[in-house]
Length: 451
Image (cartoon, rainbow, N blue to C red):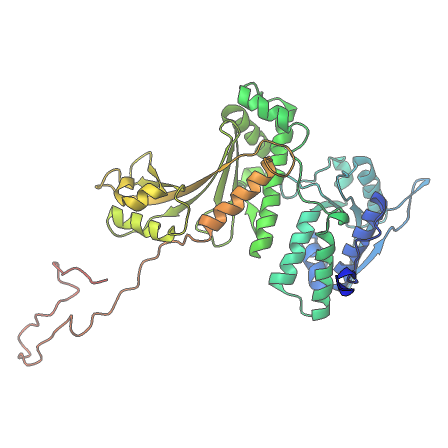
């Protein structure tokens, strides 16, 4: 072994020397806030949506405040000043499996209100089930004058990667600094973990679903539904990080205004059908990706819908889809929906490749749309690793997008083609008063257009 191979590369933010949770949280806080201050584009990406002005960020750690007769130490403070406007937010950080504490957050909200600060930002490995919903319940009265925001570490890393790799950083040195933060946060010792647990209620709920004994008023079902939504948000962040795009869960307007409605619908589906469903929007994909986890059948099904061409015979339209799926697994299920028919004709891709007519239930009916779906095994374990639900969901979503989503393109009509002189012959020797025998676009009985 050469001498150099045993040497450790010097890092701007080293992972060595982290002893205990407090040191882990202090180092993660300091690293993140320092890079937010140094790399303007990254700091703006995180704080802009919270209402901070587009200005240089001043960042501090462990700032002491008096709250009554006791002294409290929020993990950090961010200040942005532009003109007459000053925006200040306190920061509370947790790493590893540590959860945010409601009492501590309420103390910091009181500090922020007394000093007329704008917000309290929390950062942890907890993933909110929906946009604008905080993972920790606090006294709503304390939010009248101070906003409460939450970032998961996964979200922070995703935004850092997207800023560096896709949106760009103007200064090369700052880009390197941002890369060092990404390297640090992706290291297991940093405490910025992935989503890795479906919760203590997962096994009991899964078994109750299988037995058909789960009840809608069971709090355990609500907890599993909430964690499923958090997993979907995590999957969106993971996929978005790889694509360099903003991948998001699709919610109805009612669900966005009332997160409890989304949870109750998931619980209802879990109790009645044994299924958990979500829809994911991927920029420029032919349709949102629908994900269904069937706990009774132990299968995950991911599907996309695509409009059929608006011209051609039924088999011609089927062949148009097959050509796009030339590299897809033969186990993909393809379904064709015809006009004025309630159900579609479904076959495996292997069968449709051999005989496209198998998808034509009625040759007299016009095929309007297709659905392509891929089935995956559903893991049962609550954690991560082989046989785990979380890993099986992430693999199903990424796999279906890779096999189907990134290959499918919407149909568009071809532009009209100019007819060549050979196709339109005009006898120039004819007298002017003799009508031409050439084809006209006004003729009722035209020969078929060449394509």
